[in-house]
Image (tube, rainbow, N blue to C red; front, side, top):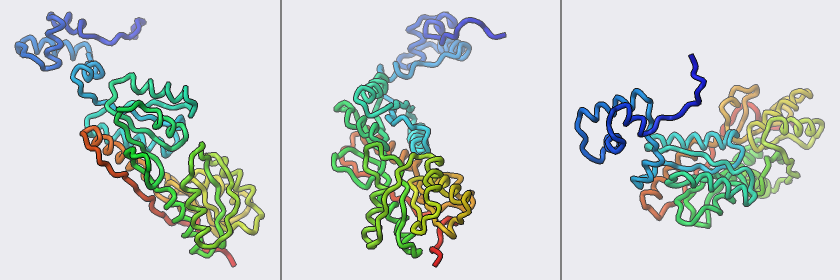
Length: 340
């Protein structure tokens, strides 16, 4: 039968009462700071098990000065593929190291919202922070963290000028790689459906533009989209009937899948009429028909690299080099030479 009383977590006093000992005795048993007679220790341990008592790790870390909590500061779209996989990588690495993770969501780049998220993160006994710089909110958060707090950033790029330890994915190099691959297939140019930049520079778009300029190819106008498949579908519809479009570089896999579906719905063949590439290599794009050519961004590795940088920072290392990885091209069925 379910009790109508609200749940109350047991505290030290409850354990002491159940064991028939004093609160200081319970504290000594749990902390292992002083000798306690074996008979009393057994009574305390039995009471802890019976009541389901869980020590307050936050209070314990404050007393011992050994902080075991890592705060992740991220923009509001934490459910997006890249955010979610990066967080998973941080959490897995932290758990292996015996540390816990909390997440503070920055709802916007507005100063008040940024400080609210930082206050939420720092009201806990935080050892250090990992900031996801995937959007402007994350960038502002990194700029607003208090001096003296150990933190690293995770995001896109190939380097930093501010000296902040960083784990990065070189999206610009990957954007160039995809575009150059399509040009090598014989396409005269590559059209680009770009995801939102949220006020920051897009390495994917910069890599696309640089590859076209280096090849002396025409640089079409960028088609701005959201990160979802419906936005890709919208642009796919608008590409139908355009003889100048033979290859399309989409800023993520979801946009690419939406664009391919729109082209297929209107009788065009991918890749016979239009080659389409994505970005990220999400788990199911290899099973799509046609399977999607894309680049593999290892976000879990990004999160793991960020945590290990933070761990080294917490150990007192100061000369930390930026950790950079370049996504790998994954060629599948959605690309082919243009029809002559």
